[in-house]
Length: 258
Image (cartoon, rainbow, N blue to C red; front, side, top):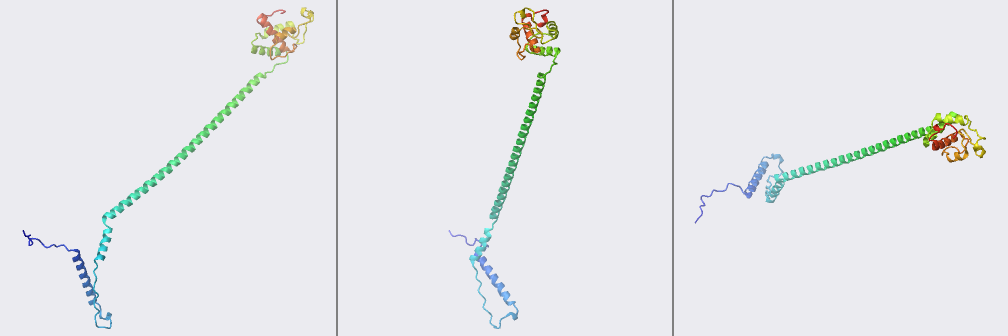
């Protein structure tokens, strides 16, 4: 069956070839008009008009222009814009990360410095406490030494008091009154007294000293820390009290020769 050719309308769209032809005709017309309007003085001396140079229409040049315009299409510009934005965002993130890292390093350094300062302060405080404790112990030792270095008068009162302190330390009983009473009866307070008439004297071991102790008894009941000289007042009193405590319970219980 034949196609209905009459029913088909002619296309109103211009092909590329038509566009190029129209452009060429327009260019040629513009050149002719410019030539005709030129003043006569601008002619050359010859009357013959120079033949118009043919206008060349190159489809390749127009295609190149189209390609250039196509190269800067909206899609490409949008892609470049997106790439630039992504690069800027990446640079900003890198800068923030570097700043955060630097801040963290500074914070760590500050914390380390603070910890070192605290450790130094603790060490200094400990040293100060140790020094104070040492000074305190030294003071205590001085006080103890002062007590140990207690002095006594070099007389009967001083001898009795010194003997009582030693007896107290050794656990030997006795009182000031008991010691003083027996000393005055035995020797009248003379540390160099000696009995040369009783049975002990007859046997060759006379009683000696403040409390008239015979040498064997003095040696047997001697108290450590006192002199071994039987005539030493403190040694004589302390040994005699030690003997009386063993035999009578205390020197306080002795009221006659013992």
